[in-house]
Length: 131
Image: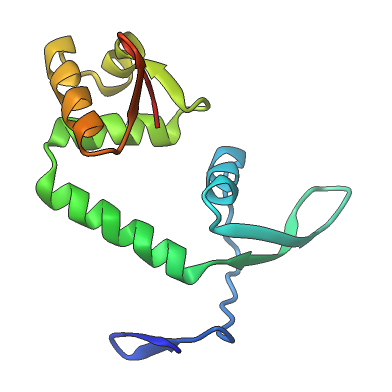
């Protein structure tokens, strides 16, 4: 069954072609790790992707979660999650997050507590968190 978005309908058979775009390796890795991107074909010499599949329903869910989070979370919480999203590792310390966000340590610590309560991150030990 398709989902309607404004004047568009997406179904299992919907194909979307994107031309002239590019992703960084980190972005492509993040998309693959989150089940949004499946590489179907690429040019072996250059590594350029020539055919990929996106999971539109997962993409829509993530977009909805980010939109919802942006409306109910503090800006520090959003900055902390963005720091995790753009980091090469999914484990970070309070100090790393303070440096990545440019926020005071007390604000980051408070945001980490709230994000842990909401189930968005996991506290591994004092001062160490995983997304």
